[in-house]
Image (cartoon, rainbow, N blue to C red; front, side, top):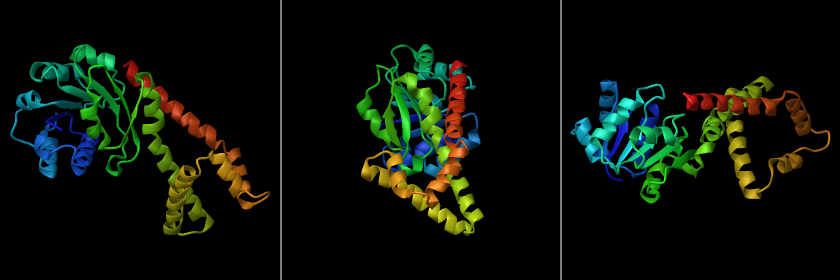
Length: 266
């Protein structure tokens, strides 16, 4: 990948840079940064040996790709003005800003500007987890996809599904962490040590996913195999059903979707 410039040097930008460097889809000498915090820029330059020779205007002029990692409430119009002033009209803008649509970005950056909208998963260091991606018609996908795939798997979406994907799949890792914590606590409550409980939860979680992939069947089918009549497993599931666990999880996703929609409206 050629020169890439990041507007915003926050945690997600750093995670993307770190993963892409580890997987050799970008070169440290071809990465430049802009941020309101000079100390943050200095830290990332030193930590990852990034290019520090170019001014912002020169970096934008050289950039083939520009990553927008600012916050939704930041002055995006001012950032767009800088891009329009210095960057090539063919430079692809990659937005990781929640709630900002391709239409809004095109209004600021020009109707012919190649623009990709991506909602990254926070599992960047693992290479797992899906990022939701939508492109406008001007993006050349083939040279861009290796970079996007360097910090997670890519799910190409119609843009109308981005908000739902954000609330369900990207925020979804929070629900998994919460489940792991709660289940490990249950093991401790039952008398196991914290270490024993956590190890068992990890193995069951990984093993359950692998079993579902292997068997290619519905989770309920495997639950039926595990639950003998009147047995331990079915009694546990009965109590879980009474707790409205499934409804609570689904309501959490819908609450996250409402917030994502609010950001889109702003």
